[in-house]
Length: 327
Image: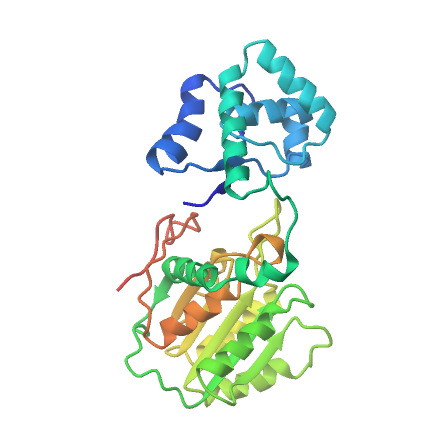
């Protein structure tokens, strides 16, 4: 398994009893999943963490929950003092720290960091984004692509579409992912796909009217959504004018409009009248990988992939956690 994983820190307002600590770290990750690597926190300076528990107490609780390493505390010196005091007071067993230190040193030695801590820049292409990594990335995407709506569209027995239009909606005007996905659709499906991009800088005011006209004559309408959630605010609903437009597109070609949402499953509630709705995961930026799902989506269209993904969240009563159409 992976040599490193970050798990959430404790989120209740009290210290964890030993039984809960074991269930979080040992039972689930180590005993049940067989994970033998290092458990790290996410960044511990986040205000949502420090405001609730305090910058020091949050890190103590993280170690009690089973983390081996505390990353980016708000006050590193104070956290070191706090952890030392917690160990001396018996809140954290000393042998618990010894296990984490031994584990960290073991993996450092496996990487020969005790001999050379520097990176050979010439070797980066053979270590990062190497074929093995890309194969694993595609396997994960193929396995997690989730089909939430299918009104008889999939599986596609004859994947040759003569006339295709592709409409993308992006929340961030400078988002590069819609252009990447458009290129991959061109490469895999057909030359001359008509692309209509909404939300870009200097958007053509005639884009929507031209897309509606093209949809009427199309064999396939692909809607690509790059509309991320707003953290701590909402689930990223589409702007009303964009939603109204997409619903008009679906009405033009209800039997052949397929929606692919990159990172946001909640949009299915608004567009479930489409012939099909699929979702991949990763919302872009440093915390997600969207475009790998374009390849999975293309394989789905070409009948080279059978969907296996399940929703990791609850969207609604109609789309509960675990929902996903397979065949």
